[in-house]
Length: 430
Image (cartoon, rainbow, N blue to C red; front, side, top):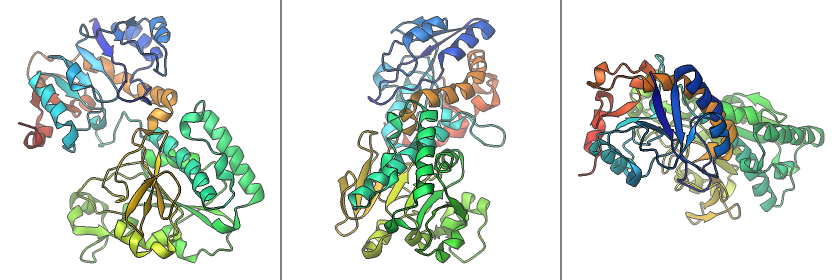
């Protein structure tokens, strides 16, 4: 059966250059599954128009012939067409207010929406994601930011040689450079003012693993959270500590922490993370959070400890606005990634200068490594494309024969919320 899909240009912002499907996979879909692709022309794309043409795709600014359209970011409401199947990160499953009009329009147009974020296997693990690349870029930017911040504090340091992630040619280029910087640090030691230098990682999933892969290029020793209290200024080392949920919250009634109980009944838990923060220099926040969970770092804590704050950088890779990290009050672009929270005045200032804690809160980190992240994403996504194309959507949702991973990700089916996402109905605009 011949299929036809479209790939939209990613023009939501100036930094976005990623693609959902790379040329080599477009060619495979054509040769192995008889699936043709129309690609919208776009000069900023990480893979050129000519590469798609060479892969057998049609270049056309009109995607109306394609019944199925793939994108990365949300498609502007004005461009949505009736009866289409759209696949992109919709940012709707938490009932995000800013995207409820988008969801409503998709329903009004009798469209089908498949969201990458909810494509999961039988074990509930996501199968298509950019998360590891967010970790890579976020950690590179954290090291770059640390170098800048220390310099503003009058401390010369080797981290200042680390560039922003988007200035590297690719992931390998970044890794080789950071590894070389790590070798210099191993040979020369740390500045006296930052001994020991402690990096904390909140979370241990794909995002955190990506961040740790970059960090591990440095000379370091890993310790458990409980060992932080025993460190002294005599330690001329970089330390890594990974915080899990059990380290970050406690039961209100003093009961033993149980992970599944926390997931199912987060209202029974309160934050217990700030007890470690007086020993952490850089915190990389890479843990899932929604508003059912406690706040992990509060402005109240920072104000109470403003005279003796050790925490220098928060790299909030998760970037939940007004979420787990209370200082993350806005997201930032890659070319202006940081702001400082001043606990003396409860004010924010863009950049790296000033009293307080630097918060790096870029919300589109994988776009800083567009080629690498697109290759990884497309490699995971392309095996599911035939199942999407060949689904029988002539009847109701139960009989559409989507692959299980895709069926779980269908938020809207021909204009109606699917049963798993019916809760979103109360959040839709009138």
